[in-house]
Length: 329
Ligand code: SAM
Image (cartoon, rainbow, N blue to C red):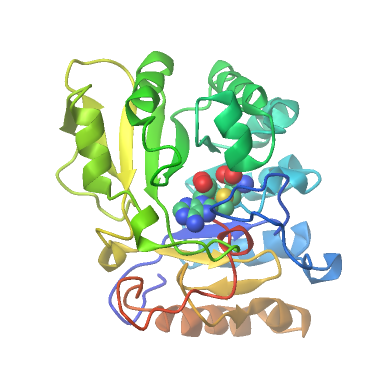
């Protein structure tokens, strides 16, 4: 078991496969990175397979592949297939993608053993989608979502980052989309992790406000009184319609006390929190010939350093140097 110094058990590993992305979402990576990570610094699939097996032996149950845009990395189904060999100890392999290139890989990912997929979709209006992401590709994303449904991925989650004045007038429309397509629509508060450093508190639409705006049109019922270690409060529609609403409010309703997550960046750094200002270089440990025991000790020692909470709401908060796209959202 991986346990931190605050008695939290770590069961969830988010693995960034690349810092690169083919979208330029204004709240994430509006101008790209000044220099992308060099290929030789990225963990290879063999290295990922090796270290993820160690994480699983230490109690990690869920692995989410993310980025950057993970499907930019070549042959992701090959990695999924390697990870699927770790089942049933590894209970869940998930992918977060912008959906641009999902259709091409969908069947191979399913056959390889991918369990779940989460898409990002920040507007249902084609022109606004293009402005938000920098790419005129809403049709591809919608097609990806229906392909995922058709080949049996379930549940399908869709993330929308809600930003004041940009897409907060679409909340009820998103809810309608969730009902019509029987998907889980998850609304995320804008966090200070954007490479453009444009985040400001008045751009954050509080989770409570998101809830109330949807509830006024489509009354909601809380699904579980407890959130467990999940990031979202989950709601169903009171009228029994299909679909689900999730609200993720890390800024206004911090949930660090129940956090079960750690992250591995594409270049092999362990991050114990999205907002960590330090990283732990697993890649060097691995490449310098450490034994399995030494790697285990390294991981256990890093987990003990996991921060008690984030400090977004403190006056002295400093935005981490690495952005969401590098860390792996
Ligand atoms: N490229 C993939 C995608 O678009 O889903 C995976 C990586 S992306 C960084 C993962 C998630 O992080 C997306 O749902 C994205 O909307 C979210 N995200 C990125 N920047 C964010 C921010 N500043 N605040 C809140 N969520 C953010």
